[in-house]
Image 1: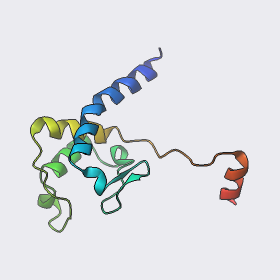
Image 2 (image 1 turned 135 degrees about the vertical axis):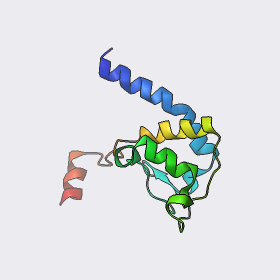
Image 3 (image 1 turned 120 degrees about the vertical axis):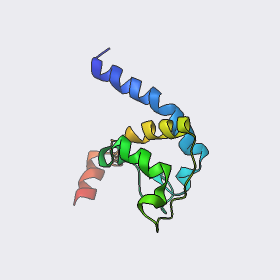
Length: 111
C-alpha cells in the first residue's frame, strides 16, 4: 500500500467520529457537503482548504463571539465532540465529483 493511500485512509477513519457528531447535531440541515444538505449556511465541501483547524475550533466554540449577527447557533459542544467535528471538517478538501457521465455530456456542458 502506498504511503499516500495509507495517509488518506487514516484521515478518513479519524474523521468518522466527527462526521457522526456533524450528523447528530443536525449540521446538514443548514450546511451542504458534496451536494447534500441545506442551503442556509455556507457550503462546507472545501472548508478544510479555506479554514485552519484552530479557526474552526474557535468558531464552533462560540460563533457569535466572532460574528454577532450570524445565524449559526452555539452548539455548546463537549470538548471531545468539538475536537471530533473539527478533525472531520479539516478533512473536507476535495471538490464535489464532476457530474458529467460521458465525454459527450462534458462537451455539451462545456459549450
